[in-house]
Image (tube, rainbow, N blue to C red; front, side):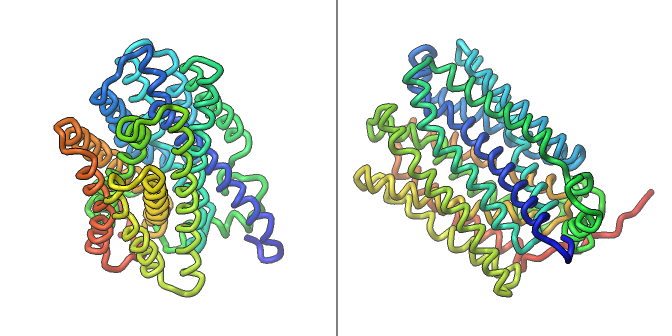
Length: 428
């Protein structure tokens, strides 16, 4: 930012963050359409519990694969074009659900939705690396993750309202249409710092210094080279375990309320927005808290790990969710959603803290791939346990342990969290 007048750059930076947060809101709206509308869909397309689990797996498999590939695409194409492509693709895939007349067609469009959404968070992470200095990155990621919560808050109200006045396909048509509107907005409003006409040459130069403040190389590191690094594996293992539990809560909470608590669609819509509000609080507070520690001269290692430890220790609260009345169960789910988003905000900031700008998308993509695969493994395992009579208490016990285990392994892989010293770039 220019020394004479930094405010225009600061304002533009946070406008970009808010624009990206709307994209994450749409991603969570789109992925919640099926879980919330499932009862209405079942009137036309019979879907049993195992098929419901398979639909979630379909989403997560392509989400995991394309999270990694999408991250690489973002690094190659840049944020403006890359984000536009993934948003248009997943919006069309979401709208396509409304054309389904069979389980197979739903599964196909679920696969497509996962493939499109896989590039969203790597793109968001790279945008943050391009625009936001290290001390404010967790706060920025908190705002971006708050968009996820906003999408989940809006989803039950919007979906139940649509179902009151139209058939279930319109749930998907409306959600997909909102994504296409955002795509037009992004195309005309967003330009990366190096080509942004609203910035002076000095401001562009300073943003470039911020993005490469640790002397990182200007080209992306190959995946194999990234996978040789201990910090990469620390992030992947932590994401695999914690997201395994998270995707189970995310996709199965409405199902739990339908099947175990015997609520109807309107009653579920009455309750499921509450954990989403807590999710927003966790996103915002998690991002603010770690940045607050950095501004008070805590080291990067301490600021990130203190926040991660606090959130991980909150997650075992779900162990008692099946033993309490419905009102207290909702409170516990609120705490779990708050704790995970507190955790996820910090965890998804770490690639920008550790790796070069031009490898951030790749690392974030690998993390998302690990998280999606964790969701597949945990979801299928929990579905098997429920199908064979082990019950919800065991499922929530296993879920409640994942974040604590993730934090312990993250610390084992990264005893001291700090930017990597790049290897010299060699030519052959």
